[in-house]
Length: 153
Image 1 (cartoon, rainbow, N blue to C red):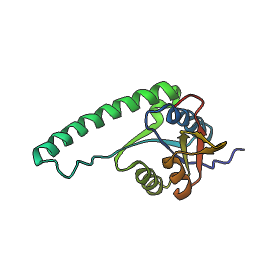
Image 2 (tube, rainbow, N blue to C red):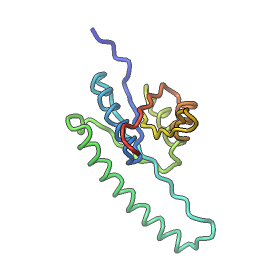
Image 3 (cartoon, helix red, strand yellow):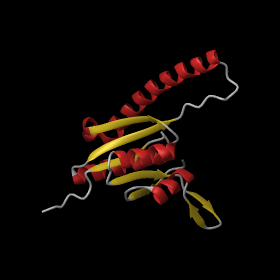
């Protein structure tokens, strides 16, 4: 008899190769645990302070269009990457800085695990995680699985 450890798994995606690798692992973990998979993307609308109202309105319109395009692209990635689980995945697009959005969403949804792809960089023979990954690991409300990128992200 298998005990279910994870009920909700959050997987942030930024469209890079490392986040797609994270998505593969998150999908496998969700399938093994029969858990709900939430694929997350953060985008932030922050106009420069010197923009006029008409420039801000135009930028806001463009952001709404880019959000729709991001949603479409995420749906394609989910379908291509997760194949059999594509219909069982929840998609969340949040207007927030990446780290704050990930942490807040994981806490609000009471996620049991965050699976995040890492942009590993070598520096003086030490692996350093990207700042987003490192901050999520340090401040996450639940365990965080960091998936190294196998490609050249």
